[in-house]
Image 1 (cartoon, rainbow, N blue to C red):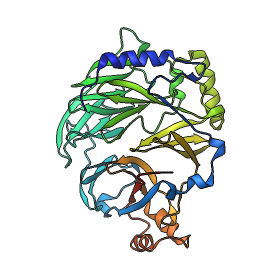
Image 2 (image 1 turned 180 degrees about the vertical axis):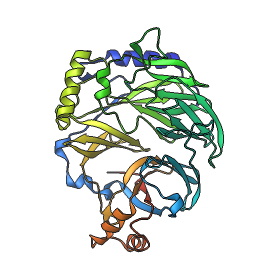
Image 3 (image 1 turned 90 degrees about the vertical axis):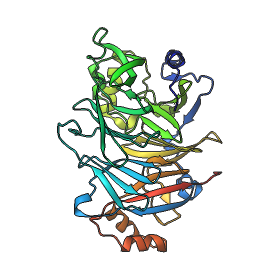
Image 4 (image 1 turned 45 degrees about the vertical axis):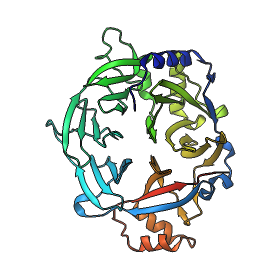
Length: 397
């Protein structure tokens, strides 16, 4: 990805921020509204066969030394899968058939070690694995085999990060305090920065810090990729920004009708306090985007509603939204759909099903396909999860 135009980024974000008021987003040229109606989910829209061609199931090799506790992130790059296990703070590397290759397990305080993995990212340019250790405020880079390359310390408190190119990081701080970086202006600061060699080079999305924002639970993912396109979904505004060579542009505005969280980028702090307090007391009153996963023709949105994580699909060519609800039915293989974590390079989504869940799904249904039943028969409840690649239809009606 080429270096972004910083001037155009600044102008676009400032213009967009001024267009938000009273919980209403004025769509700029090139923007689309993704309108989700959480109380109007249709069972017919929850059938996976409407959107997917097939699923590929990849049992991950299991052994005492390579057991996975909880999958936080999955990246697919070329011929490998990279899995962030947040339970053990390990990054495991598998080949496309689920065979174990190596792992990054270097907890400690040394130069090539991390205290805890807050997030990871796979650089699409060179396949390097980058780990964010927020406790030491460091980004640690390893090659695709898990060998240590280098470490960069930074002072920007980061919620999420991604690469713009091989030596430039874009980082999102959310509403966290960054007094060290913005010491001359604090509590005034910025939410989005670019960093080179650990130093902040440019600032975007001006913001005033207040401790009340720390009471709000953030999203599962902020940055997400499909193909060579990098996007960001920002807290509160539920706006999806494109990060492109020509700048950062607001691309989609996600709304939920009367369930839209009534807070925008510039909501006055006293009003924001009331909204967050109400949200904490009754989170089912409003919807909030928790994760966005995108592919060529589809945007899959996970959101909270009525104390459940629910799903909606936006069909990009048709500019239509399908509200799935809390359950996405796999009527192709006769078992449940996986937990979707990321997009795959080959027109697919990628997720996982825990081994014990997979076994139970097959046992409790009479509709599972022979291949799924065969996979289940080769599993034990203590095995590693099964990765699932969900191949999407080229055309969805």
